[in-house]
Amino acid sequence: MSFAFTTRLPLSRHAVDRDHAARANPELFDALWADARTRVLPIWNGRALTTEPGEADARLALLAPDRVPRSDLRLYLGLSLDDDSVEPVGTPLVAAQLGDEEARALEPDESRWISLRGLATALSDRDAGAFAEALGLLNWHQSHTHCPRCGTATLVEDSGWTRRCPSCGSQVFPRTDPAVIVLITDASDRVLLGSNAMWENNRYSLLAGFVEPGESLEAAVIREMFEESGLRVTDPVFTGSQPWPFPASLMCGFTARLADDQPAGGLLPDGEEILELRWFSRDELRAATDSVILPGPSSIARAMLEQWLGEPIAAGPDWVRG
Image 1 (cartoon, rainbow, N blue to C red):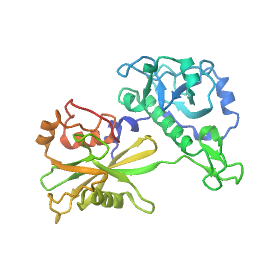
Image 2 (tube, helix red, strand yellow; image 1 turned 45 degrees about the vertical axis):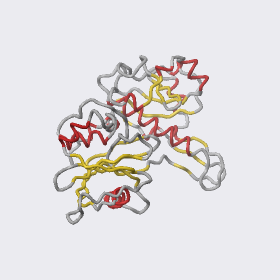
Image 3 (cartoon, one colour; image 1 turned 135 degrees about the vertical axis):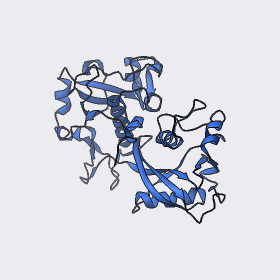
Image 4 (cartoon, helix red, strand yellow; image 1 turned 90 degrees about the horizontal axis):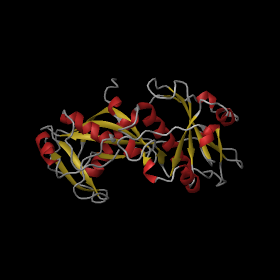
């Protein structure tokens, strides 16, 4: 399989050696805080500290440990592999979650705290991957503060990569929820887009849904597309994947085509999640970019549509979805 498509996905880029063998060292953070090479990425309410206000010119602010206020949760991200960054290859990277008081003491200008969605396309491969790694881990910690077996508060171990229950001894590891996102075409090579109930009426994207327990990705494609559109599709083909830590998804991109005996006009949006469905030819999609809000540049849906279209989507109303 070629990785040419995956390299176009902003959040699938990475240049960090996650250095998993070092995580088990209980004294790792003591050693890292004593190492002048270590750099820390401060995160506050899901936003990272950047070097400049605003999104266009911002870069992640990687600070020496002695510049970072006390943090309730630190995560070892690994070792930098970026030849072009200020920090040399091998620089240890740590994410630190800050509370309100600590974050404001470090940087009171909130315009310098920017979300991953806003920064994704502007960041280097290393910084995009490190931010996605940190945000995914922090979101997992937030939802796994207590043991799923006995309800006891869990303890953070393995440099932020494990939570252990002190009562029953069970361990919980980071989880990712796989979801399929599908570019469906008909016999005329038109693409199907849907409008979600939570969006404005003119927002459209590819159809997507979570994989259920005991289900393959391909089976999820066929089931989810029928549930959301009333259409039977066939020939699901994997395109590429992108982490989407909002809060904990892995978007698995597929193409599929309308079944031969399925009329393209038999659209049945489920009425709960999907309110409207439309087929677009390439010319119709080009003409609609001034009036239809399409997936944002950090999303896999945008990359899949541009691959089908054969060109970048023209500037217009924009938004972000996985």
